[in-house]
Length: 140
Image (cartoon, rainbow, N blue to C red; front, side):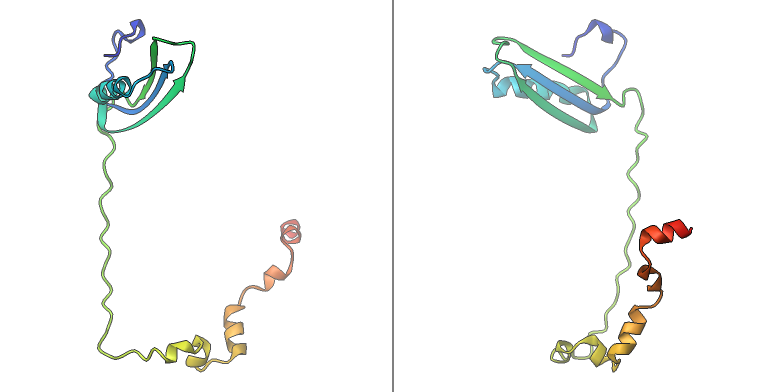
């Protein structure tokens, strides 16, 4: 498993975030890669985030070096899944037939609104945009 003199009293079980770097020569096999992955799975938390990276170093012919950075050690399952929010269904009245040909006309015309009225309705409170932003900031 994972051995290091620096980790004498440290238990890696239940780690929540794990960064793994595998440095090996050109002859790194999939089996060796899977063995590292299985070893990490043994001590990782069930919902841990694991990121694995590989570096090919031609000078390391028959060697394999694995660097592991583990976070979230010793903490209990503090993270709880937020409760799901139920969305209310909207009931649509489908009793009446929809006249799809009427939908080809613009909404302004269907609602008997003149173009000027529509522009006035949309253009409210937009007069301040006539002054450039840098001048508005200087005035403040």
